[in-house]
Image (cartoon, rainbow, N blue to C red; front, side, top):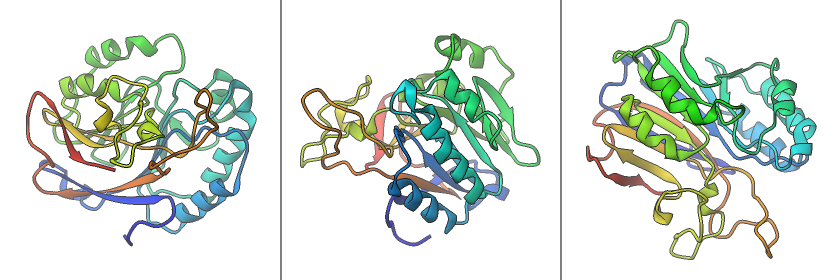
Length: 267
């Protein structure tokens, strides 16, 4: 993959027990688009994604800005699915900004919405776990997953959630990688990179990037959109939007095993 350009941010991830057939697997991670209307940024994003060889495109929530923006968000998603063709498909979960009306509009456009549960990809050593923030069972996600079928150690265990606070559950389940969003990387940072706020319980210096807890990695996207901050227009400062594109490699799992939360890679 070329060096980072536009919105695309290439990231190499090494895992100790990555199945051999997944060597080089490439995953584009879209999160926190906060769409209020289609814009040239969405056209550029889709154009950049079409130029890459992708195996998976995963989506981790907050696709709309307001509850009335479902039709605009659905229009962007339909264009995305029509023009980008990942080998194994699109998979996603919903976030706290998303509505049931929007979910209905994108139900049959070619994205596999995971809900809350475990899904085996056919003909591929990948198990996908979803935590959905849409509906009444969102708060029961941990119980649903922990009481479900055991995960398979010979597969890549990949979890999608909007909130990064699902990391402890992911580690309890021996998930390999949790992909999340929600924080916007802080959206507004000091020149040092420290986020002013991240709307979650993570330390502000770990608002995005690659973290590790026990044997589980979590990759937190800075996302693509912005939300309004009281007294300030929608903007980003020292925290540009991005789309991480992960390439999986066999090798020692990044970071060290610890019961604490440690930062492995900053972005």
